[in-house]
Length: 318
Image 1: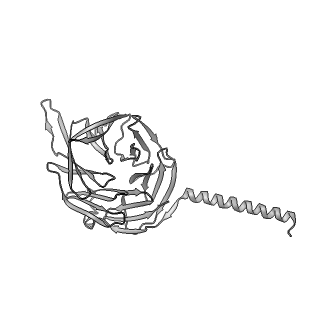
Image 2: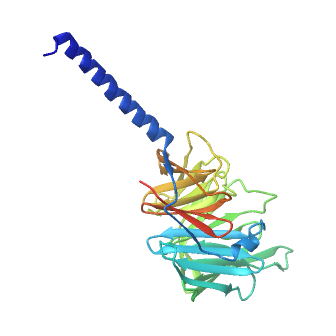
Image 3: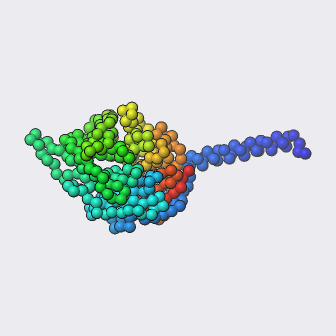
């Protein structure tokens, strides 16, 4: 039997080892998890021909319904839907606006997507001002046209669609880029019989321009600053806004919201945080050579990255 003082030494070392393991776990949780892709596939086989064109825009969303990809280029609009394993279900490359050029897309979680087009000209009124028209066309995941919506507004207060949920459509008003307004009005509503039916509006002071916009699962609009990662949370229920600042500012390439959390893609990592600004996890992603992520999608424990050549890498997260 070991002497009492030896038992005390053993207990002390056991406590030190337990403390060391605890600290190591805390450091690992702060540093984050290193993830490698569990699958890679191609959603847009023609994107490689456009990957050097900076005018090409990609819109990508992942949900329990599957994956939706929209690519907008001078050659047209591609809409592709796939299941969560990357098997393509539908793909159409012949979508176009009847009147104007399509310049943006707002994918919805159910797989449908609003395509936004604007006129290349302005109609002058008697007072010398002008009007700007935005047309919205809703397509199903299979590329079937569902409904249309037209927005008319005076230049200087133009209302542009910035985000969409399953039934939600969010518009943001702002002045011309040369004369940014001191405030901005955010309109929450739905499309009913070809018209925008507003249900709430929130005035932002100061205005938020050039942010990444997405809708949280609870209905808030998230406006994410690309340079710092700071988030303006706009709540249609309280008709107010709050600013969530990152403890460690970082440049953000893309963002996604899922399950009450927001995911920010920054360089080779993705930060998961709640709407109060608490960092839940940091995922360091091991990507293949030449993979340059341009968009992010998250659903459940699946995280997807889309690069500019149409490739997708899927990761399992905790």
